[in-house]
Amino acid sequence: MKALCWHGTGDVQVDTVPDPKILNPGDAIVKITSTAICGSDLHLFDGFMPTMEKGDILGHEPMGVVVEVGKAVKNLKAGDRVVVPFTISCGECFFCQKEMYSLCDNSNPNAEIARAAMGHSPAGLFGFSHMLGGYAGGQAEYLRVPFADVGPLKIENDSLSDEQVLFLSDIFPTGYMAAENCGIEAGDTVAVWGCGPVGQFTIQSAWMLGAGRVIAIDRVPERLAMAQKHGKAETINFDDEKVYDRLMEMTSGRGPDRCVDAVGAEAHATGSVDSVIDAAKTAVMLGTDRPHVIREAIMCCRKGGTVSIPGAYVGVMDKLPIGSMMNKGLTIKTGQTHVQHYNKQLLKKIEAGDIDPSFVITHQVKLDDAPAAYKTFRDKEDGCIKVVLKP
Ligand SMILES: NC(=O)c1ccc[n+]([C@@H]2O[C@H](COP(=O)([O-])OP(=O)(O)OC[C@H]3O[C@@H](n4cnc5c(N)ncnc54)[C@H](O)[C@@H]3O)[C@@H](O)[C@H]2O)c1
Ligand SMILES: [Zn+2]
Ligand SMILES: [Zn+2]
Image 1 (tube, helix red, strand yellow):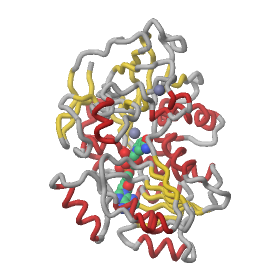
Image 2 (tube, rainbow, N blue to C red):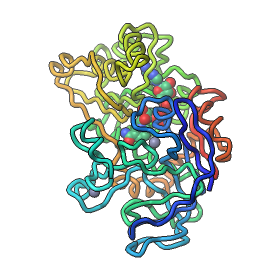
Image 3 (spheres, rainbow, N blue to C red):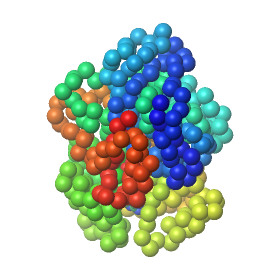
Image 4 (cartoon, rainbow, N blue to C red):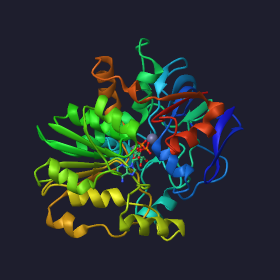
């Protein structure tokens, strides 16, 4: 089959690789009909994620049709149309029982590497480095799905297009969990850093959960425009204005009640000293992340407020304003998304017509054209906000 493979920093290629096979009785094989590129894939593409190997198949936002199931699979059969969560979860361990699916204890065969780096291993993820399981990803013609009774979400309503349900694999639940982690109280002001796809779904979800005001921060004009038009957010362009000053002006000096970092490890910053040091350190491998946004969100957040971090980080960081965080009594919440906990309730919202997630799609291309699409998405060229690949 054809699959999009990682070959090194900035180098992905469509290769011909062996078709996946059922390896365990709980596996299913899914023929992929639509699969998206995520901001998290950019961290791999840009070489930020350790333990990638040449030939690794990328992709963790897939959907398609089941073509084969292992002997132990009860809930799926060939022909079922499914969206596959990016989190691989056993459904039975301590964490899965608590519906903390991204923390599954049983799905990372390389747990030792993760434990050495993080103290404990989170769940295995599709297409996301060897430290997180070394699983082949879903930017491919076929995907092996372990724990197939726990992960895939069946889509029985044929009137819903792939484009409407595909993002139940990751970014819609991710935006929703980011907003839920804020602990929004009715009328709260929610500030969202990053107007990429995750930021867009965080904005939508903040309204669903009772926000009174949403402020979106980015510097890419079409992303700010989408936040304004679809997200009904007020916007700040961080190239034009000092974010702290503007947020204080907009909130009469109190600061936003809830702050969301939907940017992650590769934040840009205009004219700030911390970001120059981060860039230098990551360039010579002395640091792993560029956490400008976490620092800024902590400084801006109102006393007693919440900073929610869906943005992905990989290693260690310095100059975290812990004094501000502690003395202002902030709550910090974060995590890879517990997709299986959210996707059924969010499917209901799509079915009810409360939201049509396809609004974020700007580009649809063939899998063969994925290498060029990675560059277009990374460089934010051609108005690119979200790419869907068609194998
Ligand atoms: N927690 C999870 O389970 C989960 C799931 C999906 C994605 N993610 C992470 O969420 C983050 C966002 O994903 P995405 O697909 O939207 O990515 P993206 O790269 O498309 O969007 C990031 C946006 O942040 C903006 N940005 C950069 N620096 C900024 C700054 N200083 N202030 C404000 N905005 C800034 C960029 O211009 C860009 O529009 C990534 O780190 C991704 O890895 C996490
Ligand atoms: Zn993703
Ligand atoms: Zn588990």
